[in-house]
Length: 457
Ligand SMILES: Cc1cc2nc3c(=O)[nH]c(=O)nc-3n(C[C@H](O)[C@H](O)[C@H](O)COP(=O)(O)OP(=O)(O)OC[C@H]3O[C@@H](n4cnc5c(N)ncnc54)[C@H](O)[C@@H]3O)c2cc1C
Image (cartoon, rainbow, N blue to C red; front, side, top):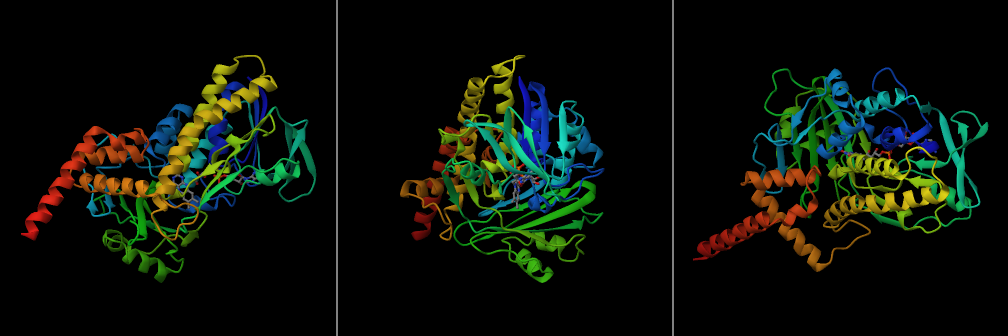
């Protein structure tokens, strides 16, 4: 049991970690620099990425179902569709379109504010949680290498106040000031790994034509080194279409209507352009280039002050193209809650127990962050313009294998299903080298070689 936890940031991580650990805390105070409580879902200034496609993978959905009992019911109330990732969608990968057939990979595509609102409504209902909006954390209060709380000020006033805590969770996102705050206290900032894919998003909303029913989502993948344009067009709540265009290797989509349409026209399939070309957007076009892979290695610090845990994007964030961020937050929040559940049921944790909890949490979450990190950064490194990582020859060879898996998935339902399940994190990434897949790939390679030989005759 923890006496008082302070959570810095009431974004996705702040709220999901709060929901997960609330049963094991006397009191939690969530501090956010912006507004948190709204009557209906709203875009938030502190979360500029919320205008863009935010796919919660099936694994993330499953965990939120466990943490928030009325998660699905609230999504239903807000008219969020349920979509079969395989049967309801056109998934274009390099070389073609995946087969469509009914599957268990069902997701709930919605706007990010809707997701945040549903989770926040649950947290508002927790008796031991206090939300303090318009409250910006300025610095940590550290005494004898132990975090005793945080110093805050009102968003519009300079009046400062110290809020005490026996555990501070930093969930303040990509722009977290924790490295600077530690340095101000004489503690060296953690080592930073950074891989820059030079990737940008542009998004806008359309009203779905009433007669449309052919699909609920279209995904078009990019492919190194010659096709830098990707997109997702998803039916979200209230019969709206959210179109997100994604350009990698510095091929950023623009925010002018003609640039946006031109980018859509140059996608490897005309499906998306044909669907929206004659529609009037119902929102402005927004862009975002805050997409670098960034990992502050707090888990490797020996001198991280007691009573501090850095979580979510503040700890490790990924190129969002792979849609892993929120799901890895959900997984790691659940890990922390499971650790707390085991540690001490009623007595407040001692500083030694807190240190043990942190080490155990970082050790267990490392595995998931490492998988997410490797999937995103290795794929990014296939682009010559990516900075921060160069692939070795055997890693390049592995991508040749991956390309073969994708080619096989276009004609084999079982392989397609496994690929989509791996991407949705419901089965482990090790399944990519499952003997069944290896055999199918080998058959494909033999068939291609035979065809080439016959053609040469
Ligand atoms: C363009 C884009 C598209 C994405 N698409 C996907 C996707 O499809 N699927 C997916 O899973 N993930 C996606 N992500 C990643 C996802 O947005 C993040 O993983 C997720 O938002 C992390 O939540 P967070 O709470 O750590 O940070 P955020 O949600 O960014 O929240 C940070 C919060 O901290 C508050 N804050 C900051 N500083 C302070 C301070 N000093 N004091 C008090 N409060 C503070 C802010 O106001 C904000 O509320 C995408 C990201 C981007 C950039």
